[in-house]
Length: 265
Image 1 (cartoon, rainbow, N blue to C red):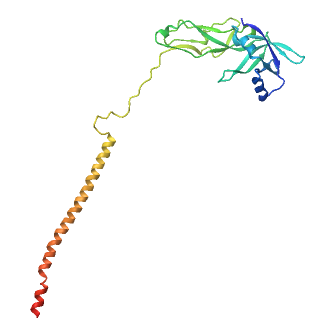
Image 2 (spheres, rainbow, N blue to C red):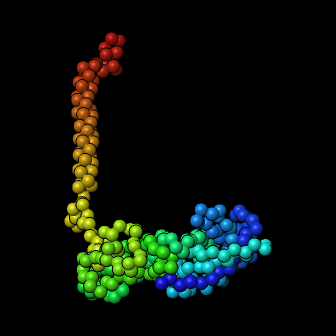
Image 3 (cartoon, rainbow, N blue to C red):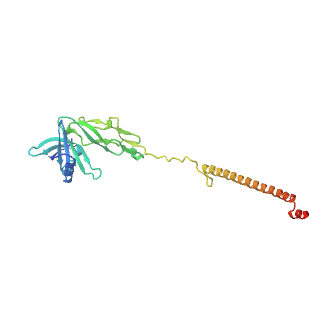
């Protein structure tokens, strides 16, 4: 059975982001009330009062008798908490949404799923994984459960429990997620595979294949350049050797200049 409490709030005199910031700066929390085909009502709430009502066993599913204080026109009606917005950095409550309800009509509400017991699969080396932490139920406002429990004391390695295994009273129906959805399981521990390097290990002192090919190409180029240089040097030597005898023969064939001139005289 859900707890019931009383909350008093004030009707907001203005709307908009600027006014909401002013409210927060003054220590209040902006909020809104909607539902039952009535006009949404903007309110301002004392965060300390909210903190007190959520400390009951019902938590956020507590049934609230809400009184809205206005200038000479107070109103009271039952509501449930629909959503609470918190600052992700400071965790400060930034906004609260409430939904008007008819106590004689069924509502849809989120209810937390709590695990009980110790799974034997954990002692076997498995890892307990809870995939569903809350479910949606349909029931009368007064029948909203504080939480739904699921016993895991029979879970061994590789086994699991589903939404269909959650026990509820005949006044409460789980509408979401699907009955076949896995709520909790004991999974085998994940082992990361270490991939072996694709390239073969090169023996110490031996060049890698690419380096060997590069060295071989460089050696061939060096040989080619050396051969060209040797051929060029041999050609120069041969030409020089052939030029020397020709020069000597020409010197012998030519008459001595001094002797010829002397005979003519």
